[in-house]
Amino acid sequence: MNTKQGNVMADQDLDTQMTALALDAGAKIIEIYEADALNTQTKADASPVTAADLAADAVICTGLRKAFPDIPIVTEES
Image (cartoon, rainbow, N blue to C red):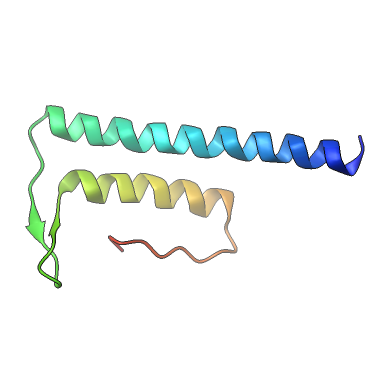
């Protein structure tokens, strides 16, 4: 396999992984909304954050840490 083909395959694999991660986070958000368990809190900057926000953040961060263990992750919720 040449390098260009290898990069295309790696890009497709990354695309597949990130799509799955986004879908998992979305499913968690829907689960919380359907359970009517938003539990809105106020952050230090006075902006709202819901249980769905925190759950989606956790799903995404876990997936990103697994995919990119050497890259620090900074999010709005962490």
